[in-house]
Structure formats: structure tokens, C-alpha cells
Image (cartoon, rainbow, N blue to C red; front, side):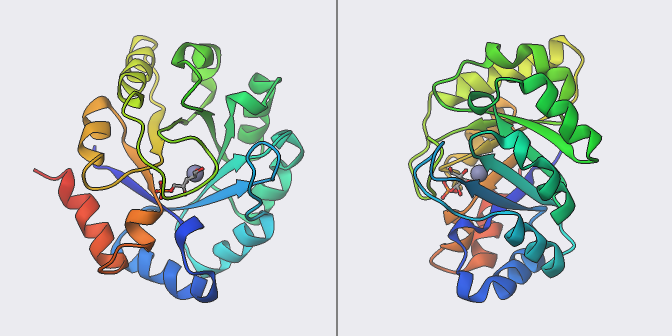
Length: 220
Ligand code: DX5
Ligand code: ZN
């Protein structure tokens, strides 16, 4: 299965958001990743359903919404209405995780569960059958441009094993510090969707070059 590239607009130039998304689409990314931060679960405040709705008007690409917010269950309906295809919520923010994932499905979106670098894979075993995406954070959530945490690799392998043992087909997505250097390792470990902000939108040779380098790193 080829790799799905989810380009995070967190590193896009918001003065030219339409052009930047258009270029990512032309360059061949698969999803647009929207990093929603609330200033509580993580220190920064970024964007909300309004930006998702804007992206929905700007592109036909699926919108991959990553909620780094406390009490995400209060926001699900508005993000679904704004046009999200995937809604991923953090294990660490959801006391009623099972129910939250069920609600995302009922809203017609693909549910994803996210685990932070300090959270063991075993914690999400009881909800794996409810999700289409397991998003393994490969940096601490909160900002783009951070360094990949190599200890994530055995965790990705563990999630892969857990899914296989239960005959589940959820896709493993990784987020943070993904470059042409770190992508081969996460791919080998079992990730099939990767989020990239800096290595696409801030590539020194431009968005197309960034996308091409990522793809070339896993093509044999
Ligand atoms: C981090 C966000 C990421 C971020 C990735 O909290 O969830 O999606 O944009 O940025 P890079 O690709 O620069 O590590
Ligand atoms: Zn993200």
C-alpha cells in the first residue's frame, strides 16, 4: 500500500493559504491536515472549524483534522459540519474515549485516536475496533518544526502488531518531525499515512520539491 501524505497547513503561509493548498494538491498530497490547538491541552491557539470550512471550499482533498483540545467532544459536530473527513482525538483528552469515537462515526467522519509520546500503545487496545486511524505522535504535540522522537518506532510496530492480531484494518498515521530521512523508518515500522508540515510547506526548494523528496524516500 502506498504512503498517504497528509500536509499540515500549520507551516503554510496563511497570507497565501489558497495558493499553498492549491500547490500541495497539484503536487500530489492525499490529505490536508488541520492542527487544532486550544491553548490548554497545548500552549498555542491555532485554528478552528472556520478554517476547516475555508479549506473545504479551497480544495476537494479530504480534510484530516487533528484535535489538540480539551473536551473535544464539544467540538465534534461543528468540525463535521465544516467538512472534516477524519477527526482524530487524543487518548489523553478523552475520559469517555469509547463514546467520543462512536460519535465521530455517527457524524459520518472517520474516527482517529491519537497517542502522545508518553502514552503506551496498550492504552488504546479497547478502542482499536472503533477507529479508522491510529495517529502516533512522533513529537510532543504543540508545534511544527520539532525533532522526530526515535523511540516512536517500536510503538508503531506495537500498534501494527495489535491491529494484525485483532484482524483490524485501521491505518497507522504518524505526526511530527517527518522528513525524507525519518520517513523510511516509520514506513518500515508500519505507518501508512504521514503528516508533514515543515518538510512540505517550508522546504527550501518549494512545496513540490518537498512532496517529491518525501515520496522518493519510500519508493524503491
Ligand atoms: C504538532 C502537529 C503537527 C505539526 C507537524 O503538534 O500535530 O501536525 O504540524 O509539523 P512538522 O511536520 O514540522 O513536524
Ligand atoms: Zn497534527
